[in-house]
Length: 305
Image 1: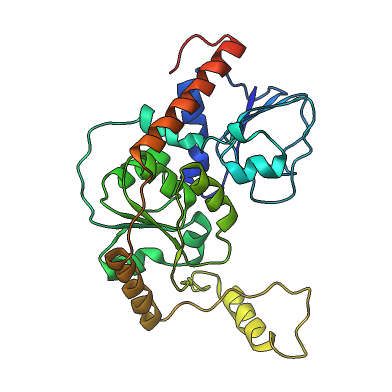
Image 2: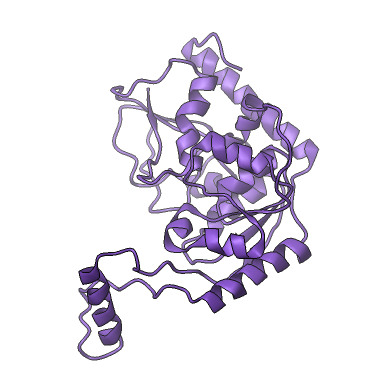
């Protein structure tokens, strides 16, 4: 089979852990030139999955795009959560949880706590805003989701509390038994996929909202900055053309950075954190491991957990 997952050109640890995770579980099983697809960690169950003679789904979720065109050549071992199972018309028992949570069973070197609080933005949010400066101002550790996944794992494990826009930040924190708080600064954060996973770990959680932060176009070439300046001038006038691409928001002022930093500090201090119960976490892990063993039996794989 070919391992199918999303590849962000700047990196996104929740997607990038796929080759490592599945190699640990099913060693030397996947081939880049295989026709059949294995759909693993990610919000992947949509119309973008390419046609294939067979598709195997192991823990993926729905949340972006149209539903996939499922046929008799698709096999589901499990999906991320109840909302995905319902959307795809699958039996409720296939909704276990995100398989990225198995990472905690495969990666557990000794670690010490170095950070009282860490903040992880969504990977798109990390591109849009200078969150490292915000965190410096707040006295909070910045955890970049675009860094190599094992580095991110260690950053999560070294913190006492994680504020996270990235759903896989919460998933890995929960798996490593690190309390977490979901936050949201931008409209691109999908509450649907969060709720899908939250239901799988039997939690309810509301997002703590924070104002967005913008990098602006200060790093762009002078001609690009001038073009964006002109667009901002014309955007709300009759001269604006619908085919023009919208300019990026202006770079956030220092006063705004200070306001957002204070908001992060308040969230960390005042908002009760979340952590799934040990019983739910253990039961989900056992159910995922049973699916791993079922897959190995189905395909004659002799090693791995």
